[in-house]
Amino acid sequence: VQLQASGGGLVQPGGSLRLSCVASGSAHNYHTVAWFRRAPGKEREGVAGLRPGDRATRYADSVKGRFTISRDNAKNTVYLQMNTLQPEDTAVYYCATYSGNLITGSMLRPNVYNYWGQGTQVTVSS
Image (cartoon, rainbow, N blue to C red; front, top):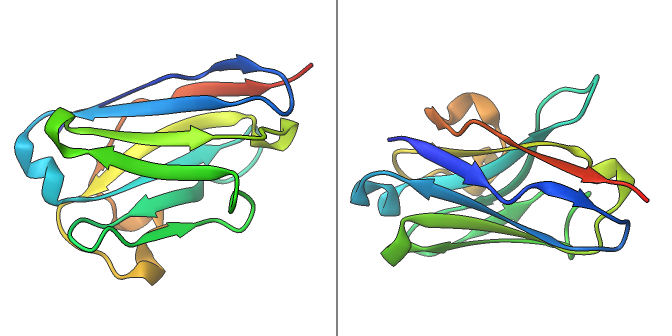
């Protein structure tokens, strides 16, 4: 599976961005998908995860109510809608997939994911 992330950019505080992650191969539709981010000087952080089938989601506390993960299986694409962005959201964002179902408690653990995209920079600044 190859993943291609896009949609990052510079946005003012309070603004919105939508990240996209296009995957090769239709089997991706049966994968658990997630977005992670790494800010300068910080460890990689799980942001949002989405399981196939029941479409259960999990979000980091820091983005709940502001970010939404979704997928369009027909387009093999996963999205991360980010609203009310704040400077602390500045980071490189990565999409990742796990070839199967993950329990909710594991969705934001980076070490369980076996495919990763290349990252897209999000900068929130006035």
